[in-house]
Image (cartoon, rainbow, N blue to C red; front, top):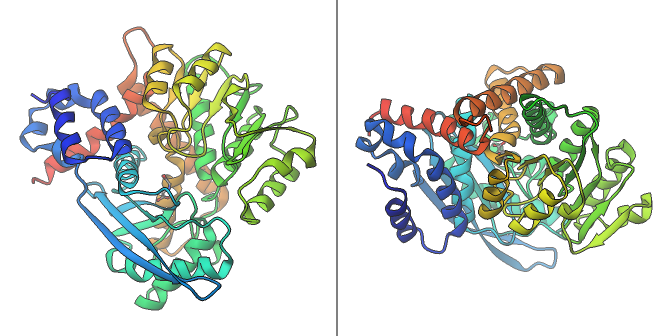
Length: 445
Ligand code: GLU
């Protein structure tokens, strides 16, 4: 019999100083421990021990030259977490705070998330402590080349297919793809999130945000409510937030906030107009990571150094970074009448915030289910590359929608409680886990 406390104690001993990894692992184990004990094959095959230990981790030095001619040194990693269901798949994050513990949490989450999509993808994550903020285009290019010169040794279209994450967008993917092609003389689907000109998929940039709204729409429908007319808050102002706001607006909701590292914008008129989003793209491209100029341009309110969770809304969508919504924020949201919180960033809520929301019977969409649309369209990009074809935006969007509806159905199947409350967190963890665990048993040890 697996016991949560002794299993976690051992995991803590083996992974000291990796709080985010331990947080993600505990959240999963709490959901699945009974399921794991119901099937004696799981313990016999040491599935919990194996599923919480990455298959392998590569760490490497990345040196590059800045615009002043100085050599800079960063650290790169690729955590190949689990490939029971398909080639390793997951994004690359460039962020100064990035540590191996963060990547291990993201790799574990990615393993279950990719399982939920039903596409044949294992889980991985990688990145660097390189800070893209304020860097020139030339510096980004030289860093990406150097990073790929090392990463190239460990990846391939049937081995491991990286993509973007925070700090890595289409430009960075293009530079890395160019270097891969230069070294290997191969034009394959080794990265996703590529430009459309060389194998990228339509809808990929918007997919995470779109998928999250499709998921939220299903959540409301399953609870006899409708999406149209809802007021929502969104954090972040990158690709993910952009896709979320666009789709929310299309579905008839009004997004009233976005945020950056400098604070948040409160725009009662709604942030989802093409003109406003063009301006946000311009702000992002200017590489300063600030949202304040939006307030002056569009007559909205700017609240410095705060997150948008104090604004009363029906639904809240953390779209920026892990643990961005705390217990305090959850209490404020609940006091202000929130109905639904949907993690569109990975592990957007702290552990105590998640527990508080679920205890208060708020509809809670966990990141590994709600934000799976991004990697799902990456999976569709792999299919298109393998077949040497490209699908129309309508085809990709329809497939994305189906995938999100299916993920929702899996959560309902595994997470509906006796009192009728759908515990999406539990449902997503159980559904994602079972598929990986069963595949591992079927393949032996
Ligand atoms: N970084 C995204 C995620 O967290 C996408 C990964 C991918 O497309 O491979 O799921």
